Length: 239
Image 1 (tube, one colour):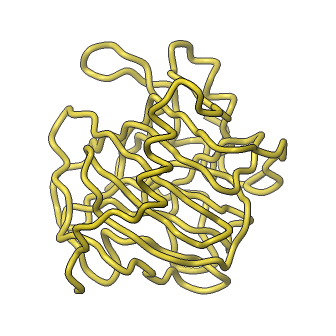
Image 2: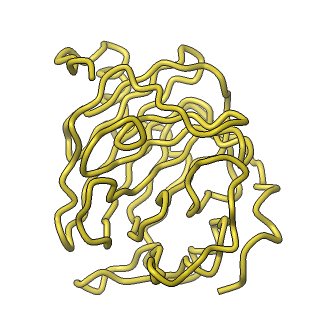
């Protein structure tokens, strides 16, 4: 594993600074105050997603199922994440994504939550895998391109700690023209990559095969295209 760079590229500093000012161009946001907001999403397997609440009663989008007994109706063609919830009506090119993630799975090496982007189809997309421990298949930036997922991070860390009943802040910056991808977790830069394989695509959330929650989603950038998700239906069961 390569050492992690301490210097944040000027492009990321500029983008993060822009995202912290009131003048930023907000492209999409949702706080999950009402159950109806789950209609903003399309799911690979609708049976495992619901409007949920955390221990404080605050709303979220929740991925919940019996990990030992349940077998998903969605089986990806190539080795890649199973549980995916995509923002259904928009496609994003360059962006800054802010959200909060919470794992509800017992601790183990690959305990994970995922964020998807540049999602063109179930066989063409990127995702960030946030895991407790890093290896070739965990805690990295991955590409799925008509084959099993492949890690593409230039720098990464040894993993992150999923604290029980704790919301963790995630920020992902993507410049799809230059190919730069930067990932922050609880305010610390933990991954970088460069790849220009895919252009604009859908953004989403989920897990390879665990359970968890997402809330306080905000996407900022120059622009977004209105584009409906045309896949995943009629896959899966209705909730």
